[in-house]
Image (cartoon, rainbow, N blue to C red; front, side, top):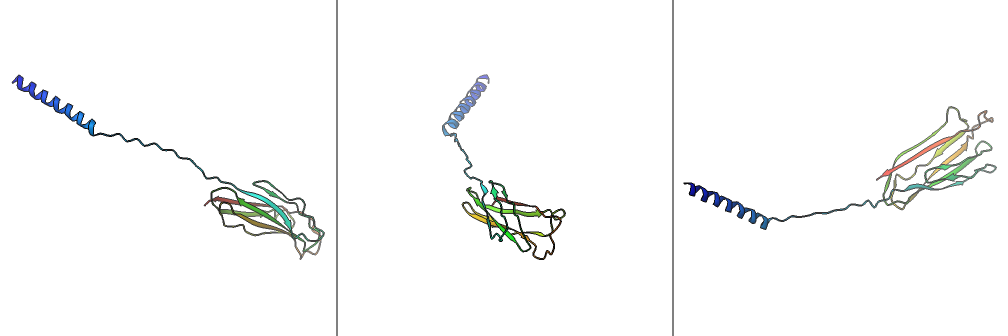
Length: 164
């Protein structure tokens, strides 16, 4: 009986060893290696500002810009005078952009009601490598009959592009 039990144990050990060897013979390890790199560049910026259609006797000043700001200082002489400021925006990156927000506000409460600001809209879509322009027009209201007591009015514009 003891002999039979030893034989059974020996047979089980042989079977287990055989299965282990067989498993190792038929098992394969697969290795996967990967790497990711972001190659897109986001670069939407202002590349210029130019005064155009300056009414006679007015002073368009020296408009200035950086990648993210455009600044002008218009001096209007009489009712009906106007100056257009053309701002150029370019997508110099490799990622297409979509206009998310465009907001222009002026100091209506404390600024002169004789100064009127209007603007055109830039492109809704600005693909990589493309340019768009928007024009801000400053006008001395032609219906003004007296020189106003308050002679200045400021404007702030926000143009926000996001990834398409």
